[in-house]
Amino acid sequence: MSNRVRLDLPTIVMAAAEIADTKGIAEVTLASLAQKLNVRSPSLYNHINGLPGLRNKLAIYGLTMLNGELTKAAVGRSGDDAVRAFGKAYIAFARAHPGLYESTLLPPDSSDAEYVRVGEQSVELVLSVLREYGLKDEAALHAVRGLRSVLHGFASLEQKGGFGLPLSLDITLELLIDTFLAGMRALNAEGGKHS
Picture 1 (cartoon, helix red, strand yellow):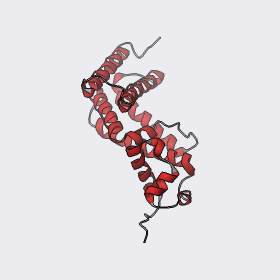
Picture 2: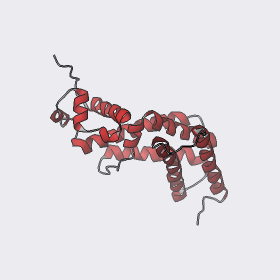
Picture 3: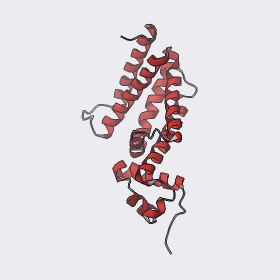
Picture 4: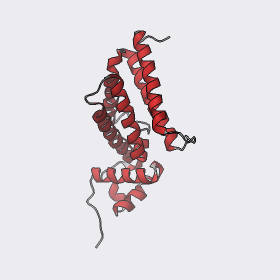
């Protein structure tokens, strides 16, 4: 008797996330997923729209998980403390779920309402963490991009083995976040203006 699992979308996405985290996002294929689930590849099409559909669902799953971790880290905190907790939680997620994290960076499917909703939640979450710095409109969105760039740059370099010196990565991360915070305070003092 075969050891098949009951297929549904959450089962498929969680299995894909396991493959991504253990073997890398490039190894998430319909064939590898079918093998992991002990089903034939065509069975997957009842739940997903091919590999692009699978990757889109994986990105939504990853963003949802990441948003949850970031929200937990920031709850009850404000200002610098919230940004530090947020940054550490972001990097902890990338470390614990390297493939799933990478899936969150795939080009978004702007026609998928669920993806758009989760992406908007991500932006709103960062805006709420940065609200205390008094930035408005475009300046606030530039700050969101800045924080994401800082954290993704660190996560990406760490995942690719780009930090070769024998120094504490956690101290480097703290210094990086503190540098970002110094910039946020300077922007706040200037009223969020930039030239």
